[in-house]
Length: 637
Image (cartoon, rainbow, N blue to C red):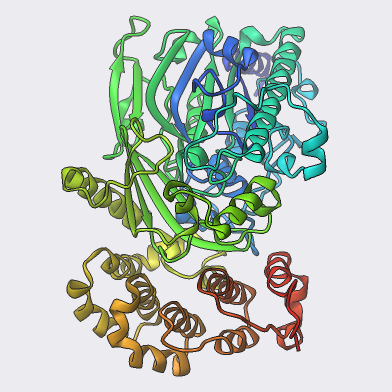
């Protein structure tokens, strides 16, 4: 290439780069939309975010797909559903390796010439390559880019994080809140006590502080003369953080605030007018593809998400499925160029949060929310040490133990239904389960089928126990899912037997408890625990499994059922299984069941820590469970 041609190519490339928008993500940790006045009448004013919304688009129905940091961020950075990658367990013991054809999306931006920076939280459950960020640190800024280079910058604020509510009783008594605790809203399934009032008020003060920090980023962009060239997203990284929000597939755990600002220069990239508040559904799985679309980067076919802002001339470049509706917009008089994609339904997932296991899935469509509890005998209140550092959590448990809560406030501590259906418009805190109401049978079936289809199509790897995935799937979860899709479909059908009346399920359960396939037996045992004493006719078979099954977790699930139904004294059986466990995630599941049976079924266990695999002492989450179980243990061998 001669010198003149090089100059022309360089100049042309510089013009193209200059035409690409800068994009900034401002994220706040652990806050759902419920505590901000912009989105909810019971929230606190956030003037900087409100100003951004007045000049941009306010999304009233934006959702994280997971209710905890690492799982939510793993979806954000890949544009792929967590259960498909096994990236949705909170803080994985072994990070997932992405296959060669899947990248964290900032890498695609860098390849397009963008300067990518992150300040500074990552918290991915995935091995991060070296080509994702130009800089990722507490000092990362767009200011170190080349002159004229477009940038993608993430600014994360921790001022609303759950840990900020781990104050002591002494601090609560000494530190006044700016928000009046006497008039603050306390949601109906919480006890309206001084502790909950103070915690609500203190949390709203933190949100006001976060809004000031958002204002600081906007001021910095203004000082650098970048507001006219920059598209800005503000959103919460998932819900939280008052009790029964972060870590749970409630609206308070998933429904996030989202505002997107477009400068006039790039207004043509949005099908919404400035100042619009829309009820269109969007979710975290869509964010990566949206940024790529806004930047003019081709969206990889490996992504599950769809851009909710897109300016195209070729509709064929978009994947189309039953979850997303596409329509043309004439927002700018460009009817055949502007494509608006709107999600019909939103999916959520939760499995392990730190040391606490529970498998839950959800789907929301319009005002209805469906939740599938695959292990409904696990109360939501099952101990999670980090959660219970909060005074409000601890007081709630004390009041339950004392019998002073009403029925609504007690739901958190009791076994769940395998499936739940809520009308969010009428019941925003999901307290009235409509799943057994004949008037809602049609919508229940529709959402149940939608969830099953989604889990099947991914496929959802969580139908295998986590330790199995770590051993067999971590090197390439996509390939593992493709190779085992028929098995996963079969396991889902087995797991769904628990949705039937026992009389209709028992014939198949009897057969599948003796199936040659270990995971089929596993889910059959889980089903028996769901049915409780109704499944007592299988006691002999299940005792045999507890004693002789070659798959350790099947012996665990058998002991779990016999313990829940009080058909067998398992107080020595479960510790013995713990000592036998060779994988830390096997041990963790056994400990989860011991906590369940101790705290909610009144059993006493003695744990001999010296008999456990010595390496477990170095495992943070196992140590957390052991510490909880042995803190008051006087008969530890």
